[in-house]
Length: 178
Image 1 (cartoon, rainbow, N blue to C red):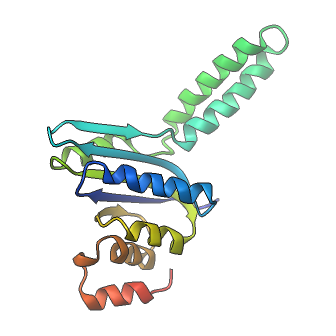
Image 2 (cartoon, rainbow, N blue to C red; image 1 turned 90 degrees about the vertical axis):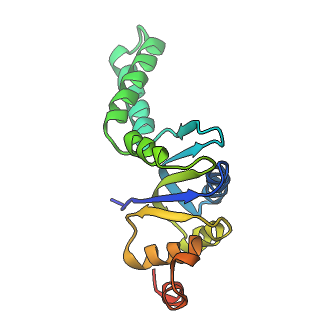
Image 3 (cartoon, one colour; image 1 turned 135 degrees about the vertical axis):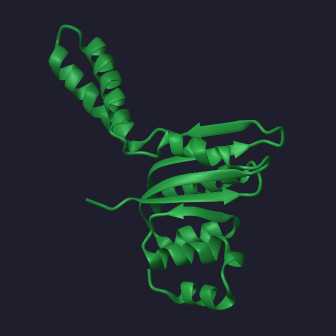
């Protein structure tokens, strides 16, 4: 079983988290990163909170498995109805499996954002660290939380928020093995 890592980064503009998410999506299409879940939250200049949760892997797998089970159970008599009911039930069960980003946590971070700020939440299953860091380096932000191993965490912070580290810390982080 692979290890999943949570990464939460805050940005100083309301649309920057969405821009970074599109960049990560491009890397995903190239097979350079695999995410289990992602969410974005932003606070507009008017103070309005906007939350975008993406469907997580638990819901996807639940719907797929539930649809298959529903199709098997209803068989020949009601195949379409069984597929629909099974998929809906599976998605509901998958959503409660808590495989994704906590919606309460997304809201909690969002409540702490100032007008004009945004945050990106990702659960990373696997990826090419060099490619991801290079992409993130183009979008300066503040790392709020990670569950990355220490060397990877330091590299992320050095790439995304270099001003938070002394020059010696930055140099050490960028030369650390991950």
